Image 1 (tube, rainbow, N blue to C red):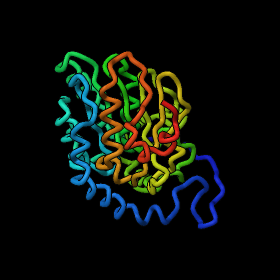
Image 2: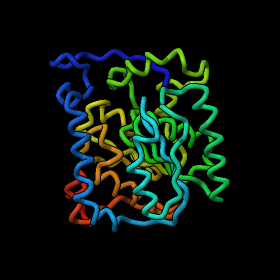
Image 3: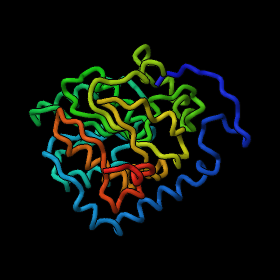
Length: 269
């Protein structure tokens, strides 16, 4: 998205204040792979994750990623009985005319095909797209789930992906991209922001907003590159998608899984 820069003081290791540490950044690939490797071990309990009503779920990838990055997540949701689509727009190079024209058409088509509003699950930049789609087409969106999406970013240096984003700025849609202030505004459909303090790409503080009746934040322990395969994140997504439309339900993981969600293991029943 377009950026409005606010100055920050650098941290002691030379990174901007509020940015992930260089240690987290450099270990991102290894930690993301570790999340993937654990999946076969936890498949039995993921098979009993909450199931909903089988409504449509549209999954949007992050910057420089394509539908291949969300294969595991989409397969998991199909196993739970949902009608699932990837975005089918190729590699995500940012908010190009191709993306901004294609997403509303895709959403309207999917909602029409399923006969009811669609849930949007967006990873990183994909989550920002999801929120903007919900803002513009709320009647077609059941809920939004963002995975490490820096929609509340106040400084471009809170994201190590900014350089790659700006390198592609010449291809982005002219005059159609909202700025940081716009994308940080609340949306009017239920939303869940999934974030991790172990995120090595974007600042976790940029991925959350004040909780309300419509919005909640849930912390997990994965790498940024692991959101789509992290078992705790997959369970959480299943739980949120299973909430009936119009119902407010706090996320309460099973007792055995609470250690996977920092702060949740200490909450009373």
